[in-house]
Length: 453
Image 1 (cartoon, helix red, strand yellow):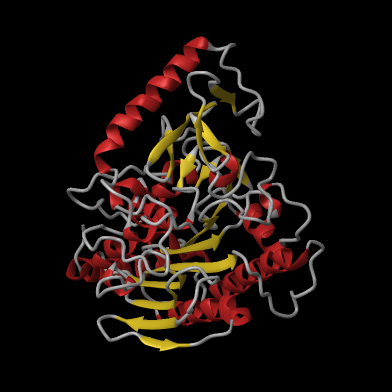
Image 2 (image 1 turned 30 degrees about the horizontal axis):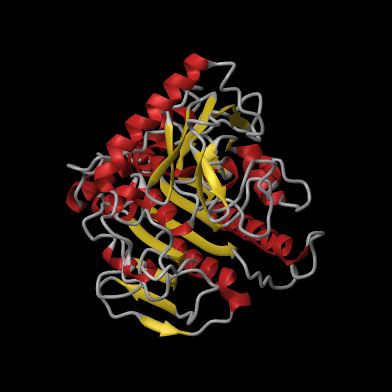
């Protein structure tokens, strides 16, 4: 891993090679360490945007992003609810490993992302990147160590949890300085998040930066602003998605103005499937819905003009735990030492060098329990919620789905493929054994009285 002095030396060498490249008439941009921007939506469904099959809500800027980049059809969030999903994205590890695999963090919940976890922010910051997180955190908000600035981010401006939780303070934090707290109106949140991210990008346009723009929409309640309010054909939820799309357009305009289009990699995704509103795009179940795809499978559009093939669509399976190893590979940075990373490097897939997923399988959890296994063709689900609890089906009603033929997971073909069923059941058992040691010994204090979010 590069330290800051190594990075400065590398930067000096880069400037020298840049001058030589310019003298030779070659394009120098590919040699600049890439900037990274992750746009993470909250509860955006697979069918809510046009690039992944949505049609009721118009998303022209995301559509343009897909035309210029790579769209994943089989991309999974790290969990089917918010907190564990965000933990998995930042650490590259299945959330059960981090202690945040159970439910979401509530208002009186004292859990935080452990300081010992190596995040994308920590890893890139150690290599000389400027790092900022703007928007929703939801990885802890009590005690002295929850601040995102303790987890690898130079600057944080945003809210500690979902915007339907109260009270809802807006914090601004820089380095080790005490956080500044203010109130902000819900309708202004998404615009404020973007404005903070844009200022950070402008301030660090000459140096490599990592930005997570963690929008808190379209999580309910929706409070879109004009000109989006009342504009879509499907109510305020659609208005909120249109506002998100417009923010994507503003970001690309800003990157063009700063001449950073060829030096920046943008990833657009969601933390899980849709809640009470929104479209899962014909996939089964929704946010929090066991191991079916409606709660897990989300959009991913990757954009890097001149680097990623334009207009490419891939069905290779991938997950948000892949972001950390992928960004490290693209920045030519070593993975965190002495940490077991579950994610895989997607760079060869994104660069068009291969069509194959680096994953042999993806493991799906409901809270801390393994409930599903996804391979490139097959999906095995061990149970689903029925009358308020997970009803096991693996023995009496084995749920084996051919995702290529039946993406809605409507008809089990377990009796048609006994060899595949045996393999998938063995994979499920192996995953349960592998992750059993990481399960909590008792429920978090906030849930011991039966509370839920």
